Image (tube, rainbow, N blue to C red; front, side, top):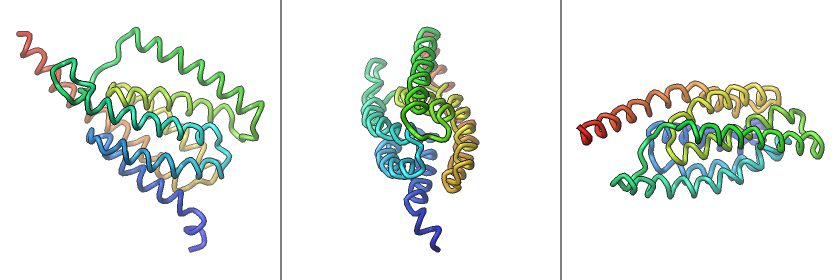
Length: 202
């Protein structure tokens, strides 16, 4: 009972995070307001665990939740739809995002190593940089973001076990597993979109 009281915020974040993942897989727009709640909770959890990059990342998630909420509602207007459709990444964007991610990793690792007492500066920086990129891709419904989450969630799982954040570790185990499921669910939607486009151009 004492453990539950001590970790109640983490438990709330874990439950809301699992619901968020379900909504993400199903492409339900309510994932974004729920993301605002989850990020607010984890700001406190990560501060207490001294995961400073992950804590700072929650502020980014709050902003990207508002951005993603807007794009999922209105981002498809250029294709004649109001709702944003699932899409694939192109080579130019992949190169740009790779460069930005590497730069973010370098800067975050430098700050964590030299200016904080983070026990895992490089691991924390690695997952943070990739998470920033993946969440932006989610906001634009780019299907390849799922594979980035597979990497992020697997590495994060190890880090959280190391720090004794066991409810969060459970969450990230499901995240890693369900990221693969999410990819194939979105792939089905993308196949339908491709068929519709081919029909229109035939």
